[in-house]
Length: 148
Image (tube, rainbow, N blue to C red; front, side, top):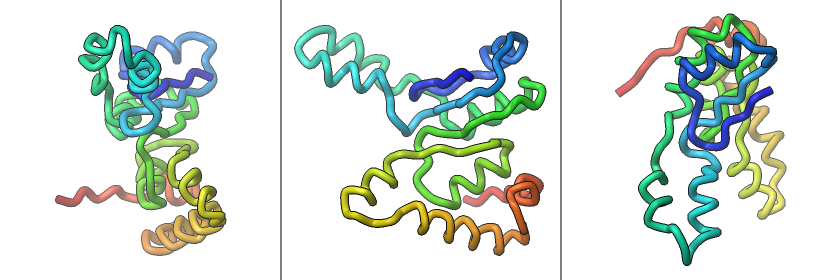
């Protein structure tokens, strides 16, 4: 498995990875943990201006997922990076993700002693009901309707 750390994986890189023995790719696009930002905080006194120029160098998770899906030959893709809601998770599955990952909503809920996973599961079931998907396989076949 290959996991990006906040910059997303482009289609060309995904194609190369899929042609090797990689069994799964986590695209980890913009909006989640960015190790460029982690290093920026860690190196507050040195090299900060160089890192700041790279701070926003990344591919959006949706764009990364779309690029990877079109060139990877069906290997499992994990969408992570900036996902915050059950609707975003459902959209990622519709777009071809086998799994989704997110941390910030869980960390925030845990800091308040809230059982976030139960809430996420219930909300995802509601989203699936709205699109007529009885299970994740059916959700993967749902139409993704863009909005303005």
